[in-house]
Image (tube, rainbow over all chains, first blue to last red; front, side):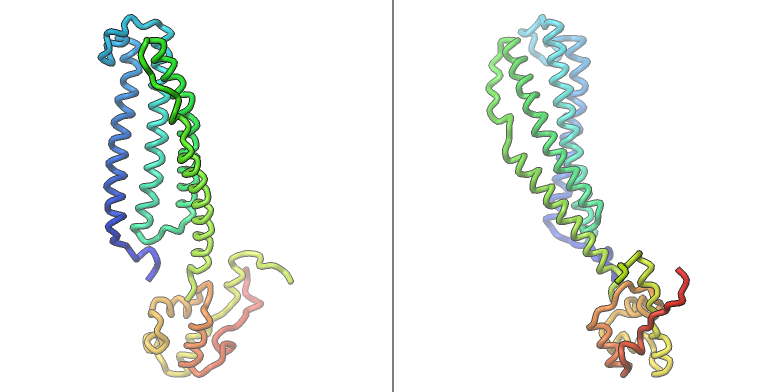
Length: 178
Length: 81
């Protein structure tokens, strides 16, 4: 019997699979909405986002809002990529064969994605705050734009990627051993 | 000592399980049951497709076939790459 024949029926994996599909769906939906908003703001201004009190928006403000929306869409895409990679890992665990080099690549990709999300969130938060001030709204503060937890997660994922790469090499050694 | 150059290095090891089984008038299925290995794994060993053999497997086969590891394995220096 090969390792790949051993399918696991772990309830945690089943929950994770459903949850990941749900997150992917929500993220994709949000991404589509945000992307649609970009031409909407250009054409209809603040009325498009149901804030007519902010009209008329200057061209500069419109450009900044579009930049912010594009940034958010990019973040959502990164978020989506993160969970796609996680989905691949969960699937391979379900198939009973997680120690493969592709999972190490997925974990590395997830680590870079988390890092990119955390770094990109800082200028986006600053841009959001700037836009809020331009239109006279209270945009809050920059608190929370930098998340230490995200950096720790990225480091953990980089380390896990190395663990998986080593595990895949060790499994390769065992393959064909009788 | 020259290093292991590539993965084909292991193909120089010949497994003479077929000859031993024939000499002992034993089937592969019977040996598999006696040593506690699956027929599929023993078949991999017999056909020379195995990359490695555990000492425990080697010892069990030697016990059942009443032979030495050298009777089961041989190094073929002439085998083309």
